[in-house]
Length: 271
Figure 1: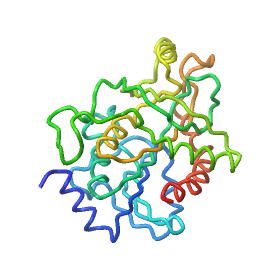
Figure 2: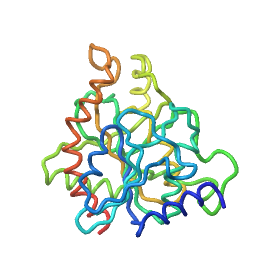
Figure 3: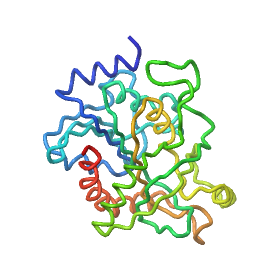
């Protein structure tokens, strides 16, 4: 039995049912899982080979619950490359979800805004990404049972899911732009020169997560939706520095809006 299969078997042993829809909750966004009914929680520490979440604002729990009539799996916390994990380890949880039968994946994260049209505290749909992390979770011998050697990434972020989300946001009078996410290694914030470079190559957002997860999900044939919370404007966009405490505070302010949006969007993805 592989590490992935062992972890998947352990999850099955803990949970009565495995939904086809899963959600990854980024920094400070674990409050969404607290709104689910009939919750069953499994700390990552109880799952074999599962990477531990050490970043601030990441609870480190797998949560099964119900949103109305919808069964939902939540990853409250993720593994980042800057914590010392490999790309394969950062994508481990996503691959386990795929083995369990999850076919739709919704990712949330905190990101820096590069596009000057964005505002701090705004929610932005990721339409595409630029991988500048220098690694890829698919490097090495390919497991053909998980997916093809060279997976197509031309629609890494499902267009239909993005369309549904924009319609729901409009109904709720929530500003919802789209943008390209640049994934960097971290953990240091970017320099103004790096941000000018990212803007020149077409990035609207910058962050330190998500990319390995999206690659692994597409490799396994999952449909992906990703939403960034612009917790700060990137270095050089505004005439001031970046304070991580301010990033967390902004995430806390906008999370209620994100929770309201997710509660309306998630059931429609399954329809």
